[in-house]
Image (cartoon, rainbow, N blue to C red; front, side, top):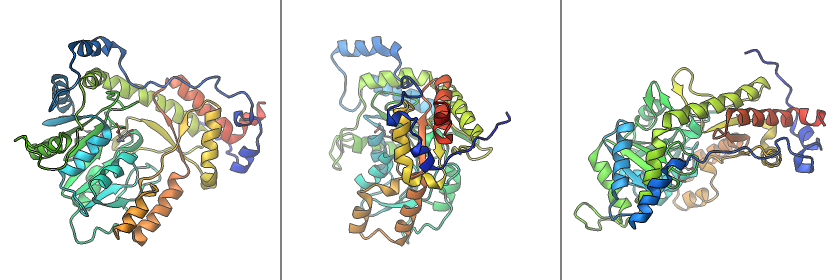
Length: 407
Ligand SMILES: Cc1ncc(COP(=O)(O)O)c(C=O)c1O
């Protein structure tokens, strides 16, 4: 499709344009678009059955949790699955299972959802960050990464925003003992035909709000090695081993029965959901592309994303004004948001300094990651393509000043 590239205005000009909802004008969209949280309404009767049974959770995991685990393992072509109470708890047990205890290096992409770095912290492992590629917004192996003399216990990579990170290439460079994929935002996506969650030792999937396999609250890990499964189950079940002995100080991270039912229903819709989200992503990207607005792209020719968000990489001048833009677009009822990179979490530097792990490498990487992620805004794909197009048009109108011209 041939596009006429519209001219983006300088941030100062956009901010000075007073025909905006943030300054009291009527919003571009009369109301915020409907965004699907992913709960399958048809599951209501079966959830009610569980409530009527008087038993919503079981010591060690209930029948619905086991059914979900078996189905999910089949879906992802893995031998085992363990249903958790959240995606965050699933990441904690995954990191634990690799043996990444206090001070052991874990190589982690700086691109990802905060739960990944939280999981490294809760295992007291030493994070070693990978930079983000500006085009794909995924972790990259490029750049100098200091692993020290100790082999990393794990490489933890997130398929962020529904895009696909090049797990095999990075894994071959890092040579960690184990590889973990955080795939909750990209379920159904593939790299070289291989599904997300199947390119590693442990695939981890969040099942919370808006995820492709939504449990309401939940997360699931898949793997082939039974020792990894045993270690995940142990730490996620009060630290108790199969012998029933508390071997380590664990947690209760088991998923509940009502949530397992919701996830089972959502799983059946996976293919349709991926197609629907990609259709919305395409609608948004098409409008933005037409105006010369840069969005994150897949690894060319190899990756088939399952877009969770369309990510806009704004020109550098927008860095100091990104938060203003998010507020201004939200006032127009356009639901954009932002993500920080993982290396810029405010608690991270003081913690790593106290451990003697914060070096010039981290300082430089934090600066460049902040610069990049500070000019990224995202818009979710859980809306209809029509709403996606309207939102995309609204973003273009604000950034090009067309919004002011039509007033
Ligand atoms: C990629 C990714 N991983 C992990 C999580 C954490 O999942 P939860 O919110 O269920 O703890 C999320 C949540 O949004 C996520 O997007």
